[in-house]
Image (cartoon, rainbow, N blue to C red):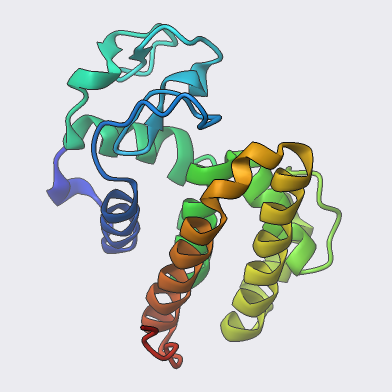
Length: 193
């Protein structure tokens, strides 16, 4: 997959995620385990130091050796497309994509569904599509961000060791809010010191 084939909305979302996820990390207290560009070793259910780049369901590339282009392929195939991001308005698609990267596709859809007050089962159907596409984007983003912040609290309640990541998660949400607002033409937050 070359960048010329990517939609501008996906490229913007991918650039945002890659800027937040960074390079290779192997923090033993991180639930994701070994990661590079945000691609977690544990995303396929195995902690084997490898990930599936070509989409055949078999880990074929060491996490340490993953390239940005390969990460982009994985992000499009396993996060952007399954989260229905091509169907959502641009700022909403960025929020959903970033949520899918951090929490999984099903949870990202559930957060979106809860924000538009439809059954939050993680399954996108006509009710979800209609509710999301007919909502005012600024109103919807406010509701999405509130739900995601609450989800962070739930993560920490379930595992207090994850609390060390809270400030980073909130900083990411602040930067994501600005990026989403820029896409939809809304106001960005004030720079914090």
